[in-house]
Each structure stands twice: as structure tokens, then as C-alpha cells.
Length: 493
Image 1 (cartoon, rainbow, N blue to C red):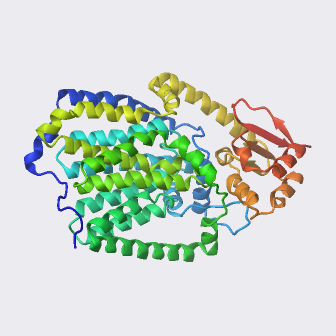
Image 2: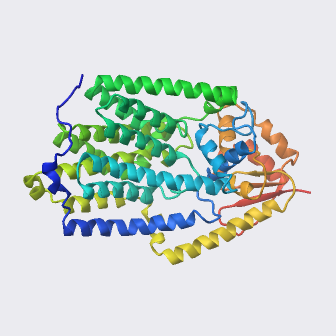
Image 3: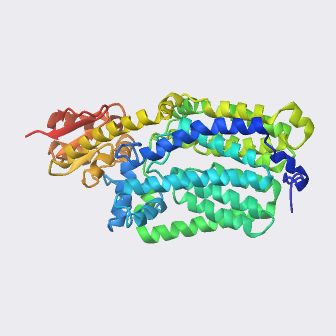
């Protein structure tokens, strides 16, 4: 039985004139798109450089390469290596290693495809709801602009977050395309579960869709929830059989949580979302009879709430907000469609005005200053060449010294051909929560087991309690490096 308003929100062929963006509106879209495309071009080119874009890139590369070589993907509790991510991203990367023998660049390719997939899914969803390419393009630009302004280190980086969201957004697109059919909920659940087995902390979309289906169509909601639960249990059983008990203990690896830290992080990171949270409330009030406005507004608000909860865990910062631009983009596109449906609304709120407001909202970001230099593409690429040379200097220094190496930023050890020795973040969390005796690591440091050690002051060192830092300083000599923010140590003779 269908619950809620009878209006589906789809536009009939009689509303085709809503697709007429107009010359001024088209000019607004072009002016909005140009800087975004230049920045994305720069980020694509940067992905081909040997530069460390993200703390996790080397960590992900080591796990994928190890799995490709037949090594365990998950390790027993108490080990100095921990993998607390689901397996699918590592499996996919390991297959790409047959074509490209570097897991960092394989992961970046998958992330680039994921960015394209999310953008296409957003445009496809909005385009499906009405014959209005202008709104579909604007929705895609909301997502891309927000992402380049706030998440540029994560874009086209060896990290599974956007790959997981691409699967989930595809699941939403599948449901809305097949909505009247009984298999729509099952297909959507399957794609969303695949996303959860790539990265498991992006839960706002499935929660929002569940709540919306419960309000709109209880039968579809039941299908969606049952299919999701059954597929999740089956997936966990397969992973347990394939990887053993270490799979479960690794996913449940200890982490320090703090409500105060979560509030501080949320207040720091929620600024780009504030206009869209207000926008969601206003859109719900103005268009609450439109089923899709309800869905997308709900998605925005649930994503903001989930981010506040996830941010209580240490180490999960900006990635907790990745679902917000997707939700905001979908809501923006749908509002543009509805505003264009009637002459009165069109006169009251012209589309170009809406486009300018949306572009302004998505460009508002405290980190925008970090991405603006990309617009001067030649100078920025020259800087990337310099960063690559400095990175390779660190890599060659580590590689030239025989023996095991400990890298807080593991991409240096990965490119140096060293084996993964210590997961600095998860080991630090285990020590700080009392789940791991620090002597497991300090005894190695006192014995000068590692030939070289790499740290990043103020970031990686926060993963090591003083009991771990003290033996490093006592038994290793700091070696100056040309790369700013990198500290390397060599064991004393």
C-alpha cells in the first residue's frame, strides 16, 4: 500500500518548457562549470604524480598489494598491522594490479571512475524526474563544486570512500528508475550493500531511503530492508569464511571516541553544509507534497546528523561529510525543476538567480583558498613536479638503507619497496585505549629493529603516545629532508 501524497513529483510532457534554461541561465552554467572543470583537470593530472595526497593512500596500497601477493588481508588482534575496512576495494585494486603494477595509481583510477559515477548518477536521477537538462547539470555542479572546494585531497586519491558512495548513489538511481516494480528495492539494496562492503561508515543514504520508503510505500520498504539485511548477513558470512576470525576483530578494532571532539569537528566541518540544511528545511516547507523533495531533504538532514555521530571517532574527520554534497545536489536539482514548472514561480524566482545562489553556496568554504591555486594550472603543475621530486628524495633515502622501515605516512615505505610494518594510526588507537601493550612496539624501537623511521610532526606523531616517541629519540638520529613536514630517523650505530 502506498503511503503519503499521491503526487509522484514526475513532470509530464506538458512541462517540457521547463528544460528551456535560457541564454542567461546557460551562461551562468558555463561560467560556473569552467573553474570547476579546470580544477578537476588539475587534480586528474596530479593523480599521475608520485606525491602523497592523503595519509591513507599508502595504507590502502599496502593492503591491496599484499592481498594481490597472497598475503593475509586481515591480521589477528594485537598485531602491529590492522585493516579495519571491508574487503571489496582491496579486491578490486588487486585485480587492477595485473595491468598497472602500483596499487596507489590503481586506487586513484578507481577513485576517478567513482567521481564520474557519482556525478553521472546525480545528473541521471534529476534528469529522470523531469525533462530538464539544466537542472541535471546544475545538480552535478553542486556536487562537483562542493567536492573540489572541500575535499580536494580525497578526490582521485587512493581511498575507497567515493567508490563506496558511487555504488550507493547508483542504488538510489536504480530504485528511482525502477520505482513501480517490485525488484526495484532489491536491486537498490544490492548496490548499497556492495557500497557498504567497500566502506562501511557511509550510512545516511540507506537510512534516508528506508525512512522515505516507510512513509511512502511500506511494501517496498519491507523488500528493501529484508534484501539489505539478507545480503549483508550473506556478505559477512562469506568474508568470515574467506578471512577467518581476523575479519571480525579487525572491523571492530579499538578507537577512541569523544562527544566533545565530535562536536568540535562537526562545528568545524559543517560550514559548507549550513546553507543546504536551511535549504532542505525551506524546500520541505514549500514543496512537501512532492515526494522527491521529501526524500532529498531527508537525505540532507540525516547526512548532517550521521556526520555528527561519526565525527566522535578519532581519525574520522572530513570523510564523515562526504554524503552531504550528494544529498544537497539532488535537493538543489529537484528544487530548480519545481521552480521552473509554472509561470508564476518562474517570474518570482528566475532560474539564473537560483543558479547564482547555488553556485555561491557551494563555493563558500574555509578550504577554498587551498584549491584556488589550481586555476593557474601551469604554475600549479610546476609545484606538483617540485613536490614529486621532494617525495622521491624521501623514498630513495628510505630505499637506500637496508632493513625494515617504519613509516607513519606509509606511501613512502610502499614506493621505497619496503614491507608494511606498523599501522601507526590503529596501533596508536589501540595503545591509547589500553587494548595494546606499547611494549610490543617500544621493544622493537629500543632494539633498533627498524633501519629507518618516517614521521610527520603534529599529525603522525599524534598517533604515538610519548612512551613510543621517547625510544625513537633515544635510539635514532634525525636526518634532515628537503620535503617540508617530513622527519626521518636513522638508527644509531
